[in-house]
Structure formats: structure tokens, C-alpha cells
Image (cartoon, rainbow, N blue to C red):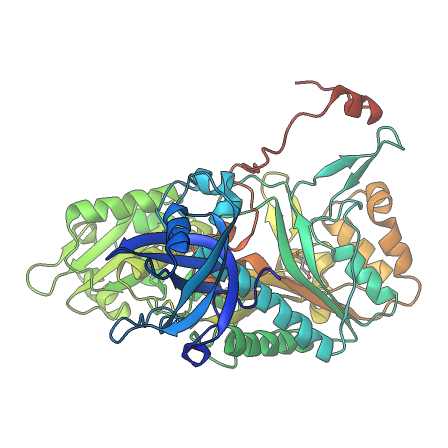
Length: 588
Ligand code: ASP
């Protein structure tokens, strides 16, 4: 037996017991001629000591061990001497006096130090991911992820769900991204597509009568690697039959409310039940459809005042159908010209032509970028509408609504972070509902589904599809946590006619529609129950629960930000023979 106990489980009550431990040397130090080795395994850390007079050979053996060597230690558990207990270590009241030591394997000096976070660049961590994962932080993250998934499995099992695997080699199942294709050897010139999500398959499981399905599903999307994305990621994919939007939302709310209480008891929910915001409300209040509701600083509409302000920039924007909105940032009333210029650059980065401001210092003169161009009473009306008081900074954007929302939505979060308004221990879940069913794609001059092809419009809005599709709402719901959209779902279309109508509305050629989705249309004719589902993102949720800044920190072997596996060096060229078998000629 390699070990009788783990390195994390022994306590003062075990004093006097003989144990065998095995693990990695985390650190070794010599104090007063005695070797102290911190021995580490997946379950924790324990201090091993030698007695150079009683066991000189053991002392010698421990003298030679280096960090990350794998050793086995036999010894007796002792209480640490008075005053030497380490309250920061769960095993800190005891130590193991070694009576035998065996080196199971040596280790070269590791390129990253396991016992401390060194803030080294991420490339080296990903290249040596198997070493990085030995670190406390990563170990905790993987344990948390395991607990999240285990909780989900148990919860859904108790609710009568079946966990069903769906194929990875499949046909395009569109979620709006590019597909990863897998060439077929057997069918020259033909390809499987890796699922962007199991969307069609889970709906077909409803046609198959499974009623309650879930899967911890891997999804593949060949997207540009902007931001915090991975080519493959994991969703809790679920689908239910005979449900309305409300049923899915209540189920998910119960799941995560209970999950938080059990898995991360140190975190608090912002509110329970979770707030529900319509798409229009969230845009008007927060400028985003993934609102962070943990703090105020909501957007205010000052379009009316701006329209008759005398200030040309405002008036022109309104005349062209734009809006003028602002935020009141309490606490930044003393911002300098330079700081305001920096904010203005930020606004321009996201499409604004400029950023208008009023600073209201606690002492001293108000300053404004525009009031000298405006009518005399405008400033007063703005201050009143914005509930301004000394110490406040007012920021305004005048533009097309989309730009105003984008810029102020981001600015609000940026400044809240700067001001420390965000309590990291609060989890603010909320629902966003009543999305537009379709959005206009300017470039391609057609309607795009705002969720995906299979989402049902609101029943009462179906007539609008013929006359004013932009006004129809979809039966979609987005799950938002803090500053992130962490999942989306919908009630689906379950009738062939309506599905065909939607394909037509979004400009999908009927022949192409049949080719790609003929199996869905056909299935809908064999008794398809009303159904709906959702797919919360496991990576992102674990990231937030772990308090990590990006999803790579909660994935064992993630790709780099440029979509490479730096450890195995993938992607990599294929052998000519493999390419021939796949009927592929390279053109690079
Ligand atoms: N398949 C959808 C997605 O990946 C989720 C859903 O509609 O259930 O976003």
C-alpha cells in the first residue's frame, strides 16, 4: 500500500498513530539542523520532520530531496511543540516524524514554482499545464468545477431528468458561429460538423418522448478568439417537454440557488427570487442585455432636454433619430481634464463621436464640455434630471441608440470597478426576457434570429411576422450573472409550418433549409410535443463562482487565446498519407 492516509486528513486526534504517506515535496527547509518537508498530495499538505540523532539515515535521505520529487514517508503523527502550530494549515497542529523515506521518483527543477503563484506569463503555465495544475489555486478550481457538475447531476436526477449523450460527429447545428469540420474518409468530399451545441439533438430527444433531458455537453465553435472564448467549451444542456417559459426559468432558478448555498456558501445571492428584466428595460437602464445589477449608476434619458438645448451636437443627434443619455458617477466630481480625455478616448473606442461631461467638485467651480454652447437653463435641467449633487461627474453620449447603449453600458461597469462599487462576494443572477424575435442584419440586409433558428416567437406576436417582424418578441430567456450572460434558452417551435415560416423570414433558401434541416421538419410531423430548454455555460459559471478573471482558469487543458494547445502543440500538420486517405489536397 503506497499510503494509509492522505496528506490533508490527519489531525491532532491522530497523534501517536503510525502512518504511511506519499506525495510531492512542496518545500524543504532546514531549521536548527532539522529537515522540514512539506509533503503535498491532492488532498492537502502535511509537515514531515526528521530526528537527526535517532534516525540519521532518514535525516540524510530527506536532506537530498528536492521540490516536486515524489516520495513515500512512514512515520508517527506527533503534536507540534507548544507555540509552533500553524493555524493556516488544516494539518497545522501536527507533524509526522519520519521513520523511513523512499524516493519514488525524482523531478528536474520545474519551469514554474508549484508552491507559489509567480505571476509568470500564461504561455509557460499552459505549456506546462500538468505542473500548473499541481498548484493550490488550480486544484481548488478543478474541485469546485467537479462539485458544480456533481450538484447539477444530482439535482436534475432527482427531478426526473435523464443524462443522454449525443454525437460529436454530426451535422452543422447552427448557433451563429463557424463550424469545425471533420473530413470523412469513407465519403470523399463530405464532412461531419462538430456540434456548436446539441440543439437539434436535444429537440429530437423531445420528439423521441424523453421529456426531460440533460447533458454536460461539449460545444465547438470556430469563432474569432476575441475576448474570453474557447474553441470548445462546456454547457449544461437541458430540454423539457410540455413546458412554458416559466417552468424552465423556475427550474434553473431553483438549481442555481441551491447550488450556490451548497457549493459556495461564502457567496451571497443579490436577490431571491431573481429579478426579471425585459430586453427593453435592461437596455434602457443598463445599456446592455447582460446587465450587472450589483450597483446603481443607471442610464438616464435626457433626449428631450437635449433636443432643445441649443447645443448643436445634441440637437443634431436627436434630429437624426438618435438619443442622448447620461450616467451620474458619484465620487468622480474631481476628475481632471486628463482623466476625462481618457474616458472620452474609451467612448470613441466603442463608437461614440465624443463624450460630453459636467464635473461637480465638492468645492470649486463646475466644469462642463458643452454648457457654454447651450441655452442658459439647460445645465440646471440636466442637473435636476440626473439628480446631481456635489462630488458627481455627469457623462453624456449623443448618438444612435445602439452606440449610446454600448458606450454608456461599458462606461458604467468600468467606472464601478474603478470606484470599487462591486462586491465580489455577491452573485447577482437575473433573467432577461422578451427579446426581439429577429434583428436586422445591416450588412446582409436581412433578418437574423436574435437567439437561434428554432426559437419560437411569442404566440401573440406570430401575426407580426408577416407585417412588422422587427416588433415581434421571441420566447427566449437569457440567464445573466454579474456582468456576464451565462446561458440562454427558449421555448421552441414544434410545428413544421411555423418553422418553415421562420426559415423563410430569415432568408434561408427552402432548398438549403431542406438539405440542412429536413430531418427536423420531418420530425415535427410525427407528433412533436411543445418543448423548450436552456444551456447555462459551465465554464463561465465556474469562473465566476471561483472568482477567476477568465475561463481558462477553470478548464484543465484550455487552448490559448490564439486557439492553440501549447502543451501538445495542436493544431499541427497531418501526415501526407492521412491527407490522401481523406482525399484532401492542401492549398496553402
Ligand atoms: N443551444 C442554445 C445555445 O447554445 C441554448 C438553448 O437554446 O438551449 O445557446
